[in-house]
Length: 236
Ligand code: PEP
Image 1 (cartoon, protein in one colour):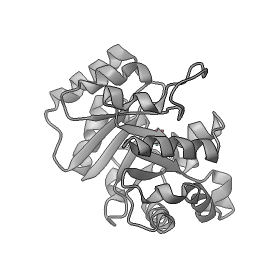
Image 2 (cartoon, helix red, strand yellow):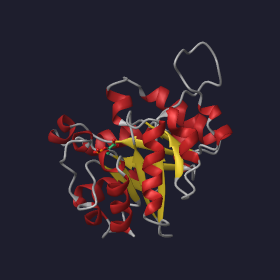
Image 3 (cartoon, protein in one colour):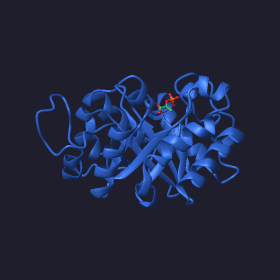
Image 4 (cartoon, protein in one colour):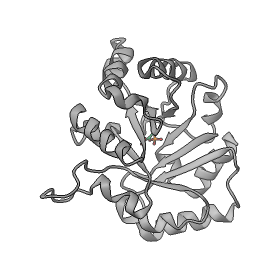
């Protein structure tokens, strides 16, 4: 089962989100060998839940506290109450734009896993790290920080080199495979590793040959129902 996860970031409103699912529905049912997950904005979570296509819905972010004086935050504890059972943690934009640090990200992972939420933990090196040959070290640091949580079966790793996100410069399949092997090694098990970074329907099949990549986390190409469906068809 290949995972095609779409990270909508701060795109789509409730109307355009509904239009996306209507269009996707017009292509017919989703092949059984593909698991689809969409991470919409908070405002679209509830309506996206009713997509009737079996597309699972996840949150792009959440706060590990149950409640409190945290203006603007949304508690991870509230997601299962609306049947949102996936969460993204550690996306490059959360790490670099919002300066979320390792301890905070670990707390999110801990909370999400304690609630049985399928947690996609994003890791990846910057271009500077890559040029210095530090990819392995960076991945080890980001992954090892999670300690005992690495054994939880609801945890998935997304390898997303920062330089490949939204750049039109995807990592080569050999690099993605090598990173996947490192992630599995650091997790001490055959954990599912997704690849993310400028994936589209034309390049997606390059990553499927080795069996080391279990699926994809997709930004730009997940925003449009045509290109999202093209991705599904390319991997099915
Ligand atoms: C992402 O946002 O996680 C991502 C991989 O974006 P894109 O597919 O646009 O590179």
